[in-house]
Amino acid sequence: GAVVSQHPSWVICKSGTSVKIECRSLDFQATTMFWYRQFPKQSLMLMATSNEGSKATYEQGVEKDKFLINHASLTLSTLTVTSAHPEDSSFYICSAPPGLAGLGWQETQYFGPGTRLLVL
Amino acid sequence: GENVEQHPSTLSVQEGDSAVIKCTYSDSASNYFPWYKQELGKRPQLIIDIRSNVGEKKDQRIAVTLNKTAKHFSLHITETQPEDSAVYFCAASIGRFNDYKLSFGAGTTVTVRA
Image (cartoon, each protein chain N blue to C red):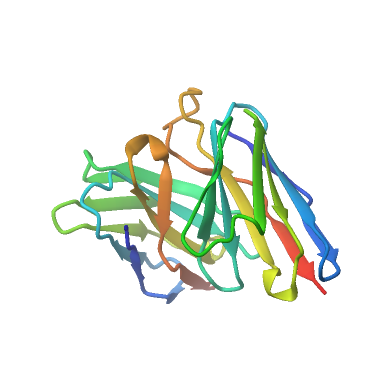
């Protein structure tokens, strides 16, 4: 139980284009999902909290107009990197806690496989 | 906000020996402490977690200890094997309980020498 998928697994795009990344909880409903960014040999940096049915909350220093988050359903959150630039190249990972789904402790975060973004 | 410090940043051990990674946190309200293992290019995988009402938890070769008074917790891996080589992250809960947010340590790269 508590499986999280992410798509695409990698993407290469030109500078100035927008990229959408999907995060899905496959066997539970997730009212909350988290989006992280991880640079090589660094830790996971929380970017934002995705809330089903309401606006995402962003961490300090993360531009909400650049990283658009939509939590359209209880199993899907999307992150859109708008007008991507080379400095946005990174490993983007989502996670979801099962909450009250009955899949272990409600606060345990299960991670998607990540999306590697390369902006040329 | 919560600040999680993790030491050491790198750890090399001989196969069969034990590995210990230590973390400290700053927010006394933190009550959930997971440990993740991340192999190169892969997702972080939960290996063990503990809540603040428990001082120690063990799962086969892996154990976690928590000292809530001192605000530190540790990961212990016994009888290390080459497949234990990975980056390990500790984390502590932040914010309100039902926020489910975590603050992560900087990570420890563990290398098990055969």
